[in-house]
Length: 255
Image (tube, rainbow, N blue to C red; front, side):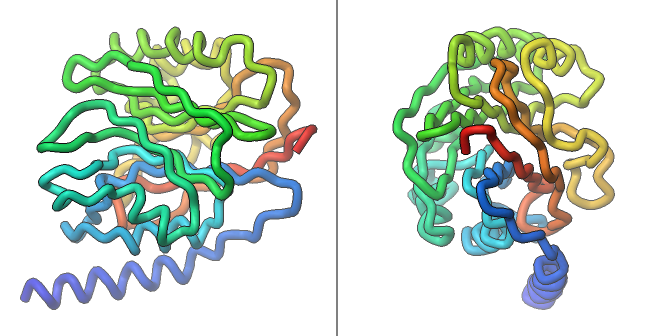
């Protein structure tokens, strides 16, 4: 019976993936993807790195902000999970652990088609578990990834740390992550004082079946760098993770 259930989930997932019909990216456009991968465990309870890689490959992003990824923990059988997906997507991986967990670490990461020229990590508050901000600088832009706390005060406190990380940068600076709060929440009000949300907040991202919450976002820091948003879309993939992935296409003045 268990095998039949898994087979049924697989058939549904393959149908969904084939139906994504993600538009090809135009030339001279940067595609940024954000994906809470639920530690690569799908709604069928199976850990499957290739399945997440297939979703990413279907979008063909330049950069992916990944949340909820183990590194060499017991529950992941000692696997460096981000590397597993990087190899399957032909991307470079940088990892930022937030906490130590089961003999390894747990945190966020960034996958990219080209290697970053510099990487920084900043500690963020989280009273249920510590959080982190990963900042990867590329030749013409910067992408940061985070996963906010479940606690509202900690989310608010995180905003000022992110602002300090972005302050003074001259390149286009993008932030992507699972922010654990909806568009009308105080943390969103705070972050929108300095950032512009460039993903579509009318497209809900959680849960994957009948989503009724927008808690995953992509932003641009307002530092005078022009950015034309050409496309913003969630990917209706309901099995690989418990969050819907999303992506934006942007054209930079210097890209």
